[in-house]
Image (cartoon, rainbow, N blue to C red; front, side, top):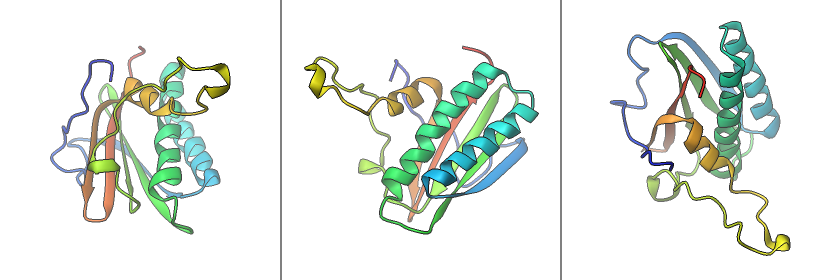
Length: 162
């Protein structure tokens, strides 16, 4: 995880961060088209706030990974459903929270950051497995919690360029 551990920094994933401003919230259809629409709306909102292009790129990568994982893993067996995405702009960071009623993460914990094994024959190279390590590299203050039948994932994206 690049030396960083995911940690719980919020008292409850159900409560918005204190003194948050610029709340932006979406109800996202749990489909690939719903994810694309949510990405377009969120990045458009952040452009209107004057967020730097490099931060927009990082945010889009992180959100694409998170939102697609919700659709492809947590809500894979559910049809005609949705999940929530919330965003707060606070100080030097963007704070995000997603909530869904899908399957929990394995062992109710964040997955490890390991990259796929690339020391294999060319024909055996993996097609996926890179998104989660990218998420863990770009996001900060990551907190996952399963409460009842709800998954809540919170994370920050710093507004300062890397």
